[in-house]
Length: 406
Ligand SMILES: Cc1ncc(COP(=O)(O)O)c(C=O)c1O
Image (cartoon, rainbow, N blue to C red):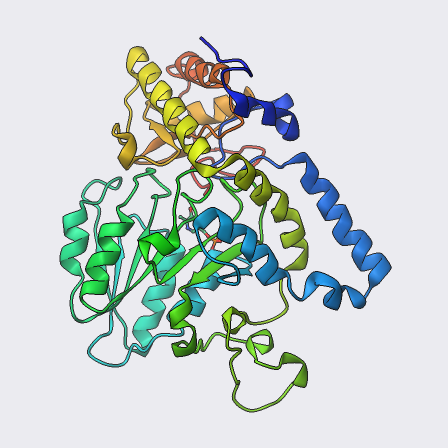
């Protein structure tokens, strides 16, 4: 039975997300729905630029990478001033890894088979300056036994990179155990929080993470161009990123040439001109997630992902996500024959999901979804399944290939 607004208070948020009025939106692992109020924030950017011109920098724009980072900090457990905004995770990863010494014996970078590919692209680039990249493979493309990862972390490890929740399978990793092991042998940890922050509770300080990075496109409903980087405070004065720029200087407006003198605080992890419009667009999502609270979002997510799994079992649809909610992020993957074509048909019917080869159709309820929408998705899969033949083209409105969305 579907829950109404009185026994699922989070459904009251539906009115704030225009797309929910006409679409079954179950793809927040890829692009979270836009909050209505984001449109006025974007308009505010335009009017500030138009009316205040250059004065906008000192009236708020210059401070935005930290001020907006503080809004993320409230969601991931960081303190004020400990999160800086960047365009994307790739940039954050590049800044962190460019701060570390890859030349000595401690040159091992441990990554894992569920990590997002662009992180690994950056790590392999570091092999040119001495890094030894060791990837702990996933035995099945969906999970990663903790003991395999722990065994790879040793006295020669400089950095361990791990995805909190895997983008492909929603497998949830034990960041606490990984960080403890890394610190025991003197290694640092960077966690990719992209698929957890906003749907799975995470507290960077309680976990004692050294670094964390993520973006806003997905569960944070913040749109593109607003990535974030957390660096543990006591590392600041030891880290001097090679990937830098004038905004990282202790006195950026002196425009001094020669080697940089890094800012004493988290500004030292900035580089060039910040992405101001993206931060205007993103803040509404952060405010809404914070107001609801990730604990409440997670409780609903576990209830709804469990419901999806139950319905799939009843319909005989193979489930590829972890059944144990403690090992599962916000996504359920269902594996039907011709999954790409079934996905295309669902999208044609205004049920937005996506597909990953080896994982299946990815369905992600967020706080704004109703149980009815989940029921509809499973019914549509059942009705499309069997009618869809394999085909070469996967063109869709939002993504040229439903197998290629993030
Ligand atoms: C876990 C994870 N990390 C990183 C990325 C990509 O980050 P960016 O495009 O901000 O570099 C994605 C997906 O877009 C992701 O799911």
